[in-house]
Image (cartoon, rainbow, N blue to C red; front, side, top):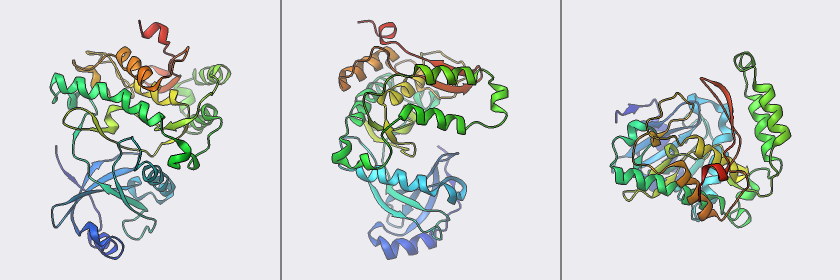
Length: 311
């Protein structure tokens, strides 16, 4: 993979580390690991060859700094849990160090599988193992004790679906309703037909293969990118995972990348059964409504367990 260097004031960062966390060593190299509109991840290497990660808002956007602290707090409270997450090391709210608040975490070694090109580099056995590891990991995530872990204090617990629909509306640009005139009808249908919220769990918000690092045996070594984490319905994570799971050979353009278009991954029905069995949850309608602006407009999908899973 090509290394993309980033413009980071390493001497200033080293000065801060020397004063606050001298055990982490002096960083001498920085490169981009993941970027875009969401929080970005920067790899760091010290003089001694140790590697860490620095996570910060994109493009020096100080206005988004509250999201980076929120992500850090979720990770901090999951350190002792059964959900595999990177070890967080330090948080800094001083934008003078690297331009924005940031946090540091340990570098997790492993395999990335975010799209079909990544999946093409894996053996059939590794594809099967990584695919089968997703549902049990998600079930453990949804089983986190909100009170005991402390994550229950980090977000509101009521009206999750309503909050998501209102946030989706706020995120629309002026021309979006012209591009997707059916949005209002879909929004109204979702508001009037939304399922009862009978359970509140930890919700990752973007749980998919591309946000996991896999160990050599295919198990999930770390779940990444917690900036959308909240408390609400576990159906949201299950639905998003299903939306990212497409059958082999599916080449239709979609908003989510899908490693599963390569042969060797379990089918979506296997993933749903594995989650149901691991989580002990059975819903009449499974899992959720998904709204995704793609080439065909806004699509609302409801997956019925009776239709999808044939027992």
